[in-house]
Image 1 (cartoon, rainbow, N blue to C red):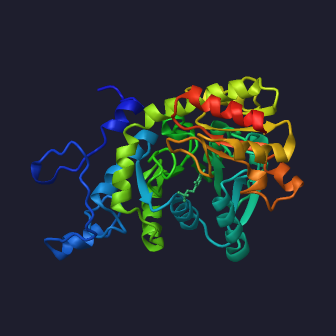
Image 2 (tube, rainbow, N blue to C red; image 1 turned 135 degrees about the vertical axis):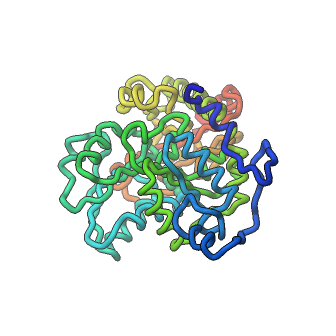
Image 3 (cartoon, rainbow, N blue to C red; image 1 turned 180 degrees about the vertical axis):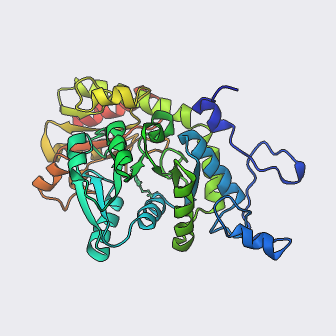
Length: 393
Ligand SMILES: *Cc1c(COP(=O)(O)O)cnc(C)c1O
């Protein structure tokens, strides 16, 4: 058969078939322990991520179905599921790096990832050079003989700046540097970084992959089996493993990922187009919009859409931003993204309130910036809510 489309892959996930039965849904194996026929068989199970199951921290049939499903969607050789996105990111960075190594990382990173890198510098003597993510010459100049990892995000938060994955991973490939990318904001429906040269793709499963706001989870996908094995081995020490029930809920959500992503994108496209021509709005950042700084890159890297997250600035400044999120009624004032409900956030008065104006600007956040994570509601209901909140702001 010709290669399957994401819509088909998301539904036809690999399912274990115990005792020759053929379950059409993935069974939930919640028990944490498995027995063996012989000492040799048990010893073999300790060898790697593809061995027999024996203890949930190192592998589980339900979790393995999720790992195989996400590896299939991303086009990887294998994957590991974790208890959170930060579990996946920590396992990858701590499993790859040692004291004296150097990392090249994008400026605008998820806050938790930033903290891990900061800690690695302060406590473990790992140097980090920060780059913009869309300038190959800058990335190449940042490499040193001891550079081990380049760490990027497909779409940065909250500017939705697109990273130039093909150019940057061409650089890491030729330099023998491991290319890692957080693909949470795009999902494998919109971008498959391994096709663009990534070695490892990480996700917060908490967001689009599970999709319904009821799971905390993470996953790391590996382009080759050797990296899969290295990180599996470290992950079993770290212990941030996925719970089988969370994996099972994620598999349920994953089946509608392509449908949900199409709606998240369509809703963000409609809202950004209307906000861009609204007199109370001074700027909109969404790569699908013509004129956005990342628009050209998005056309080649994210041809099917740029996801549900975008940002806009209110002409009325910081107070208008706070008034807007206070006046919103249908959408919820909350951080995070990727669930079915629309969320809004005014970073300057909440998540980033401790930053000075200069620090805000460096993170690409204005005092009047509102971040939106579009859900899958009817877009006209969302616009009615946004329009009344714009009037109130
Ligand atoms: C939420 C998020 C994370 C962290 O994931 P958790 O599941 O909350 O641990 C990492 N990266 C990105 C881009 C995220 O949005």
